[in-house]
Image 1 (tube, one colour):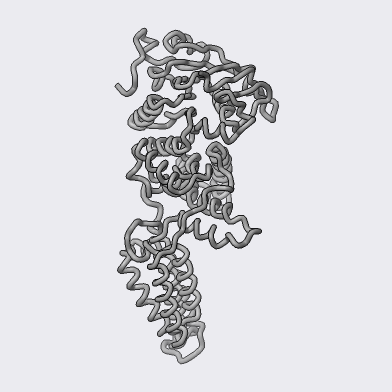
Image 2 (spheres, chains in turn green, cyan):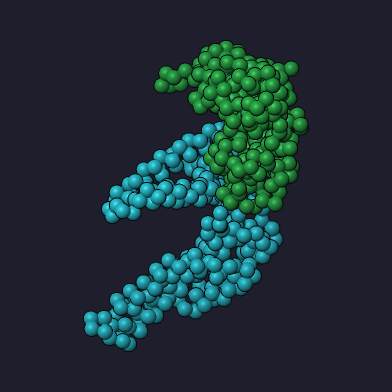
Length: 249
Length: 251
């Protein structure tokens, strides 16, 4: 079953720039997809259409068969989105409050909210930080908190926009572990990046974008050697003709 | 990164920590109002009460006073100004100035009042989670249909959340400018503009990103109401407080 169906999607910004150009795409439930491309290739614009933060100029986006435009609230519950700058995404004054923000918006009752927040904090390993101010967390912990904020809304798809940007090695490993654990628990994962090295070993599909179009779409092993043509750095191992290994090994 | 200030919530199990935020807010307002017009015996009673609360809640007075150093300087200035400007019986006379007995008493009284109010605020912030304060504001504003209480509470929360982020940003921008020898420019207006413009621009950009992130998490004004519940301790504290305030006013 396709959880995401994009049909002939184009998006033109207010200044007339074409952000997306006739994109058609289907993503199966439970898939792990990496979308790569240079800056300005339309990756972020594309994922912002998945939960209606941007609406199509032409074409349609459907989630589990229902148009995003038709029911924005449903779209935002189904697709959780982690933004590049975790600091701007965290709204709570404490870790607990931030995770509770989404469920409060869904008007769940206090018991349900408390249950969801506790479960989510356990899942991301931040239970001990519940009363702490988010600005005191490390980069990796902030990303995990941003993930927790999304998880508390129980989405089926989680889109990560440059999840490893400006993280140190332990931070990258923490976030990568979290992404893999979400995939294992049945979530559909979309990772937007221009840095394939850290995540490509785990993906089952690689999409390359350039100038608002999809220029390659297939199994990572089949197209990873061609990515440099489109302004994306290929993983070191593949350049040396070796198998790309996980950063967790 | 270190804690921004000692004026923040610390978890605990003291009486102050257990009281409902609405009652604490009421007590804070009551004591502050009475203190503003209080004389020495009245302030003495409130000081005893405050001492008990500070000991009971283990308020970190030492680090608090460190954070209050500018307030202490202000108190000294007030005391000094009162001592030399209040007419009365002179104790010391230096050229054009004379320090009067009445001036000293009046300065000490004003400083004592202000200290009580500031320490009460410190104890309130120390023992109350910020979401409880937000909830109390929402509760207080609920009867006024024309005031958007939920929106005000959200704005309050976001302000508290983003003050450290903006301060960090200001620090980073200032350091980047120092690295490019901005200190060689002696004109403070030039330096202020050079610091202010990028800081304001970054703050607005951040606000933009925040709005998108909130929208992605289904933000709307019909959210789950905050939970506030008064217990027997709160009502007992209210009775005690009314008795103390009654005693103070009747002196």
